[in-house]
Length: 257
Image 1: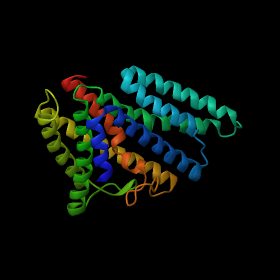
Image 2: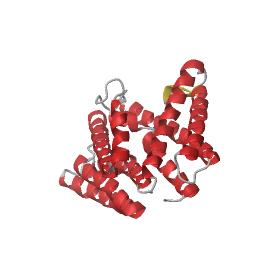
Image 3: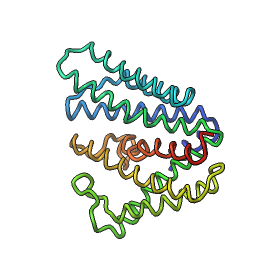
């Protein structure tokens, strides 16, 4: 809760400070992901070009928009290919493949949060994105814990249930209607229903996606930085894939602002 308060405060006080928060989260997330890949699979995705390129990606997205984000992503991928050439060729293909995947999965998806922030009502767009994702996760947990009986994807995440998914959809749609009506300029409640539905789907898929990665690596958590919650990546799993979804739907419904 304290961490969340700091993040929200930075969002509404100085936009540039919140960009710094995104950059820190991206770099720590990349460190966790590349560390686990090397420990469990012997895959050496080069962290230095990923961290530098990831930070540049977020800043470029904020300053230059989608064009800047794509250029930074391309240069980061190129830097990964070149950086890995300084080591022996054995394992080159798997290392650079993992590096490009990490660049897309963490900083590129996070860049859409920075893109949301560029709008005139940017802080409220980002707050809407954060609220809907958290509410979706909370609804899934609350309803799944109380009423969950039918497994959603037992081989990937045994704790997730179909009832929990219904809870995520219901909570997110309700929160979406309220956010679009009262937080977003020119927003309408029915748009919030659609955004909430999309958020519940993307957040659930994001959670399952990281569960697949962790099962493949044979680990429970990506890190230990957040006691009781795992690492940064364990908190970003549903946020990262949801960011481009919310950004796109807000642009479609109310414009880029």
